[in-house]
Image 1 (cartoon, helix red, strand yellow):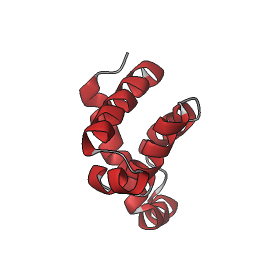
Image 2 (cartoon, rainbow, N blue to C red):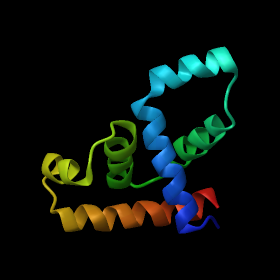
Image 3 (spheres, one colour):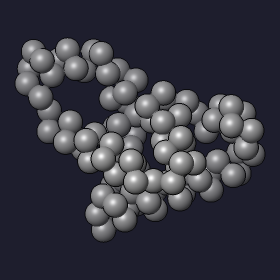
Image 4 (cartoon, rainbow, N blue to C red):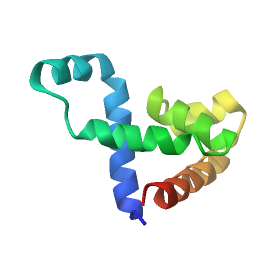
Length: 98
């Protein structure tokens, strides 16, 4: 099973990738594909099996780069509930990715 720190680090990198996707994809075409693309694919494949709330949370936080506070407002959740869901998302990925 993957460690919590590994999942957190990879999710930070995934968030960064999606925030700069156009520029990084252009770089990948010029320089060659980074092994990081495999990480993106692993998480993309794993999230397809997640419960809908975790799927939505992943899309909000990592694909669109929203903050937890913005997600709480958008979805009508408390910030504490979003933090709880983030913990569940980390646990989900630790099981699926590991």
